[in-house]
Amino acid sequence: MSARILDHAALRDLCRQAGADDTGFVEVERETLAFQRESFLEAVPWARSFIVVVRRLNKHTIRVPWRSVSGAEFTEGANDIKAILRRIEQKLDAGGVRAVGVSGFFPMEFGRLPNFPWVVSLKDLAQAAGLGVMGKNRLVLHPNHGANIYLGAIAIDAEIDQYSRPLDDTPCLTCNLCAVTCPTGAIAKDGHFDFASCLTHNYREKIGGFVEWVHTLADSRNRADYRRRVSDAETLSWWQSLGYEAITHCDYCMAVCPAGDEATSFLSDRKTHFRDVVRPLRDKSEPVYVVPGSDAESHVLAAFPHKRGRHIGNGMAPGSVQGFIGLLPHVFQRGRAKGLTARYHFRFRGREIAEATVDIREQKIKVETGLIGKANLTVTADSDSWLGFLAKDRSIAWELLRGKIRLKGSPRLLLAFGKCFPS
Image (cartoon, rainbow, N blue to C red; front, top):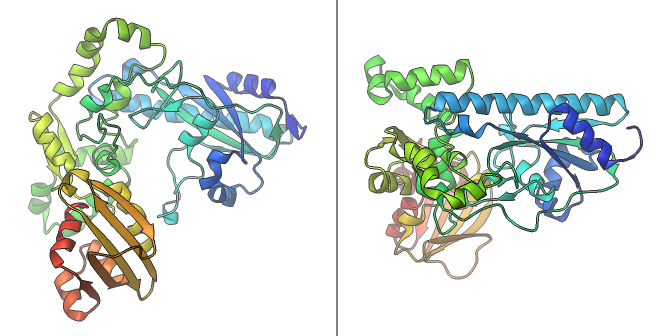
């Protein structure tokens, strides 16, 4: 293992012995990694190759409607990946190869936001390594194990004699079961994905949801006020996540996906799969966490009237102007943009200086750096005042009176803009 060019067959065998269900290899110079190369080389500047590993999850456990059961499988899968990476690291280190494992799970570098909080995108690595293709559900679908996998990677300071190539075909069956089961409507049949709605519900007890809950605690006047905002059952769920492992509230898109070895049986008997796997999740009565005024709120009412829309904030107030600009495409609600055709110029001054153009038309958004074309509304703002407004710490009316935020164009366009990004 001490050679600077490592044998791929020996590495694959090492990974198998460590517990990996599949393995691939990617060079750091792969073109598809260019957008994040600067980021991961900041963490591991000596990296020359990635070993990417797959750990299969128990699909039957994931399909149990009780999230406590499926959550335990996710927790064990995450622990398995970390243990596998650790065993491989130790073997490589003993052979004189520098190696650092990246599991893709918490902790992350949230201080780097709005930049990537992770070392490297494992989904992009896995696709480059021929371990799967991104499906409509935004999960990497393995040709054998389908969506029921966890990923990990190891950065090493050596080259490998043979690197993996992406798959030619996708395991995705375009069955749309992920779309019809998603309680928030985040996955659309036309391929659109609503990142904010997915994150708000599924990661309620992680990331933005935790921030929102802490704000709720701080804003509550007393015990009665807090209990009016948060049920005792929800508080116990928070205790469970904080004391043990934070569970997700959905992952139905993984549970119902028939890609992989199950594809043949699914295609020959769709009704049984729908009855045994899809229907219990669709029929389940449960709270669905939604931001008021979001597309998810409308979807729950229309598609799942037996589920309960639970109003919360998304907890994603940006901490910088660049963060605000970068978040826009991810939190854009296309349903709320129906009928809106407008171009916005944003000019930020003060502590942060930036300019951006946001074009909204045909329920799509395009964000560009700089002031492009002729704007229907120009917003010139002090950066701190604008961020304070987004965080709901400052009144937009007061900032307009102070001249910290100035508008050139109809204020109604600013209201229309805000409706596209409920928080």
